[in-house]
Length: 464
View 1 (cartoon, rainbow, N blue to C red):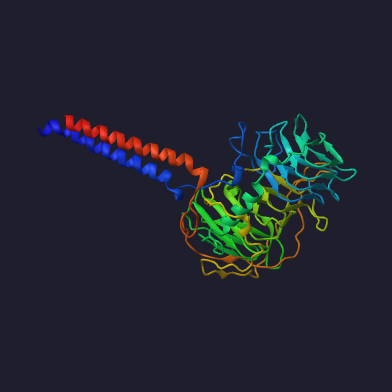
View 2: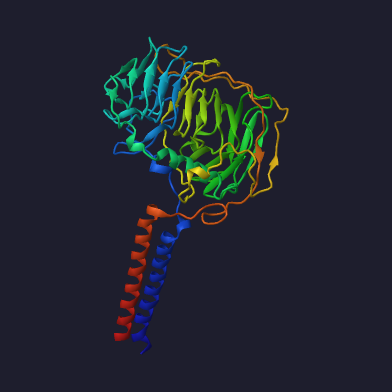
């Protein structure tokens, strides 16, 4: 008799274990806090059927290696091309006016496709630049949305004046596909920094400004590494410094929240290239953001204050540039030449956010209570780094990667040790809405399958 019952008993045990596993999988899929989210509109990753398997290093000048149908540069206000700025790679979307009035560095400004960069433009014939207001190119200058056999569309809702190649297309609905994205980005920027109004997101590591460099040290384990910065990232004398990350586990997303009504990054080295696709620099409050220095800056940038102006005079940025306010690329008051915005995706997993009311987003907040007791490490008197500008030679009528000179600024970064609080707790918000529909459905289906299998096995056992 024991021999005849051993098989049903074993079967029942195996099926029970399988049912528990299936139910557990269903639960993990269904629990809101178990998921992480992309950027609003899912504009972080490369989109389309022709994305490259791998992105090249910075300053690639080979052939086109793929196409990206997503947005690389989003500007909620105006986009001004000034100084010696050279190019803005990838799809550019500007809700306000686009105005090109360079003071040097050649007569051309490239959009969509860049001679030196990732070499992953939007698909041929698609929008390289979409403008919701007017477009103006100064006399004697050219706005180029083409290179050899590759070209795109410059689509303008208002009037277009000046030389544009190919000719600009007038379309009152030029930016209609991006309706609502500005507010969504503002709300996301606020959520990433303040999961509850007035309460900062809990950090997982420390930030120490040594003068010649700022070091971000993670906890070595968390899949979302969160850092808080309350001062400018500059040297002890306000000049350039390096940025470096440590203690970051493989595959982790890095979220750097830079608080305050004005922030300057003046960088000559770093951050490390390996973190680029999962690194987000978030400015939730700043009305003024200055990105300066002679580095090839890594990571995506998000500025959530819609009245803000971001000035970029870095040699190159490599990642999404998502600004709900204005953008000034290049500067008439600073030296250097050939500033470039390069198209690289953001593939990180960010915190789930409930629908925020943009009207509740703090404007220019500089005194917000934190969940941690922060300490400040001011710049030391160690010698600042002497890394010079990039070695790429600027051209006279096209994209370059020359460096810029630094401007004065002061401040220190903070060191704020803490532990990560998972989504749904003090450090995050539970996921809601359409993004959960699929996992909830799959979870329910898996749970149902587990129950049916267990019931069938039980009936079979009883019959035997």
